[in-house]
Amino acid sequence: MKPSRSRRSVALILDRLDDRCMLSAGLTPAQLATAYGYSAIKIGSGSGSVTATGTGQTIALIEAYHDPTLAADLHHFDLTYHLPDPNLQVANLAGNQYNAGWAGEESLDVEWAHALAPGANLVVIEAASQNLTDLMNAVQAARNDAAVTVVSMSWGFGEIANERSYDPFFTTPAGHQGITYIAASGDNGTVEYPSSSPNVVAVGGTSLYLNSASAYSSETAWYATGGGYSVYEGEPTYQASVQSTGRRSTPDVAFNADPNTGVMVFQTINNVGTWQVVGGTSLGAPAWAALIALVDQGRASAGLGSLDGPTQTLPALYAAPPSAFHSPALLPQSGGFSFGFEPFGFYGQGGLLASFGGSVVTPGGANTETGLGSPNAPALYADLVSSTLVTPIGTVGPSVPVSTNPTAPIRHHKQHKIHAPRHKPLHKAPPRFRHSHARHPRARFVHQPVRAAHHEVRLITLSKTDWSASGDTLNSPRNGLSIAAVKNTRSPINTARIAIRNA
Image (cartoon, rainbow, N blue to C red; front, top):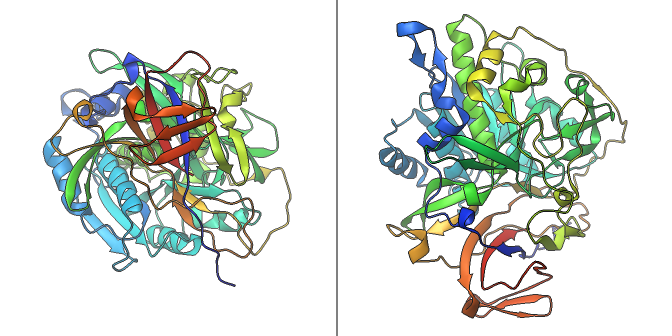
């Protein structure tokens, strides 16, 4: 039976602009490394200490399709921010298959894994397609690479009944040095796999605010961050200190994800080099992978092996003291700014983003929006480097039938982004809407292969003359859009920030 054609659609979130959101540029590597303390991590002590860079470690990044300009784009990024070119290897399993959306994801992942661990080796595994089988083949290639110590995955899909059969992919092979697997928790306010696997570190999203010295000021949960309790995965033993539902909760940790506090990414689009301001939980996966690479470098310096994700990294994170994390403010029960509405819904369920209902906070201090929190990198580094904790893999919780037919589409949590035209600041040349390849998930999938679909949010400022409202519909003649179910209940809008996510 041939898969039916999926259709493209967009979901729109509308809120009023404020001064905090008017970014002329995204955060730079130096700003983000300073804010979370990556640049303050030292190996050794006194005059003999050196800054941790991830030297000797290898980060594998799991992508889909081939990006022919990846190396050139990374080189331009490095020149701009005075970073050394890394040892970059690309395993192209896709041939000449190219997808602009996934290419953008690849640029984000590679540039920021390198920015935060500039000494680490990078191995990019380009899966043949966004199908689950192909992506898992890419994961298998990464785990069989003897040099790899951490794997980053900025994609996911709605939970499926047989997802536990894929959990063994996210373990360290026998005889291999320890591997930590890290996945974005999603941008839909729901639980997604593989971040829901008890073998994977799930990274949620925040909005990060800096002071005038580019130091950490404050942080809040990002309204779209994925999280909640798994339907199919049991509660890992390492979560016993923070919850007792019998089900795996996500995320474990968090990182900056709001496109309004996003980062700079360079990508070649239609043969034109383009700077973009990017957010999404996609950023958190390579950023945490970079941090684990710094930790593994420190452990190697101390004569210890690299961390194994499910038996060492995750138990150590949950055993770490509160001082190892920042504690972002949680979303208000009322939902925050205006309304965030998904008119097309996710998996056939429309309505307000799940995270707008407020987080479930556990007695141990974790929650289903930001988990344990975002990294206070120097403190967390010291704790993980010295950790000797080894906890066997174990779960308690639901027993569910295992299906042989995956039934939900994969998403890669790519690039909630603001396009900046080449060599021009954002406020001078607002970009145009550009639809991506993302497939609209349907309420039912029967015998369809699991596919990856990315959802991106691009932020665009439109003046009042660029759109008109008719009832609950927003019309933008300039961009040919008419999107239903958009409201603002607080006050009239003269200027709006429009975020388009491919759903």
